[in-house]
Length: 447
Image (cartoon, rainbow, N blue to C red; front, side, top):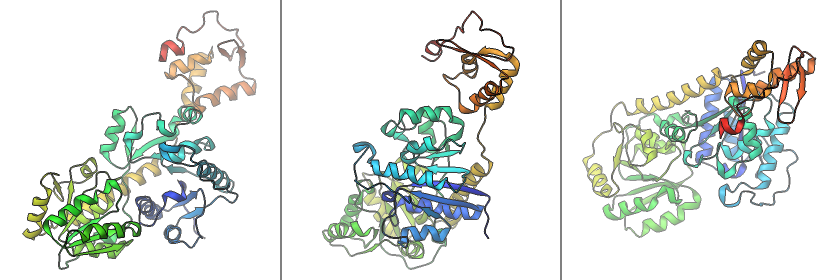
């Protein structure tokens, strides 16, 4: 019988999980980290697509995940509840909530992890003091308490009342700076790498320029096509099956030779990196840049100067100007210079850093309780308006931790409660409310 030290819930919609996409690789990387730490991970889905033998599910199960699907899902009517903002359907939301309730009938969780899109809507179910990580790779969208685009006022209030349980996390220090500038406390928990074998440096004959990506706009495939058209250097492309034909049509117009492969990973991807003279990643935006990091250990990795490239040291990669990149890459290609000998060690250090940050945070984290402050306040003041406690804490309302000692004293009969139009009086000595009401009000204290 296998036992674990922690149980973690991760929330995921079926529509966001695709073979070889970023969500898929993030969960694979985290599951491998969890396995090394002896944590059990349950992935809670809104529905099951196909059957449980589907590759994406089976890959996660093989690494140690338990995939949980709602036993009684609502009918999938594809009605878009949040329409243009995020595209989360009412069906997905309802089924995620159902799945959480069903899972918690038989399991206790030490931690919950998900992006704001999911967790912001199911937080109201997590009222059992479960620490929750809000994981986002898009800090620019975090404008409300967590995100105005899919913010629920009721949930926002609950978040404020349980603020000690919630942590905003993002994958880079650069994103932390953006969030901090917006007044959001955040920590950096980098993405753990799923395929460490990709870092095993190979000595293979090198030729061609490699590109990984789809026809999605942010992948900027046209910059790669322009490079191949100008240089006529052999092109190597790794893409999704859905983008393969479109990229093939583009490459045919260049007159250069090329090869295209779809949906491969692990050793196959490593061999492609190792046999390419250059890896070019012109992406406008990346959640982290897994492929770029993997390429660094095998070949010359080249990218434009965008925010995501700040994740990597320029000692081990090439950051080029968009106006002169063709000349730069062509010169680099024919120079045939070797990569740095310690490139693999550098990339492995990125993975080690990610593992260390995640394990330290989850293993050490406990909900920060302010219950002790309330108990001390009660013992010191004994007779006071509830509002006085909120003022002392310097917040417009009390958290659940802060309310519990008050409720316990009142229910046990130790405290006498007097209710007034605008205030509530708490007294251990059975005293009547003072005639002078609190001078500080919420409006002048926080407005």
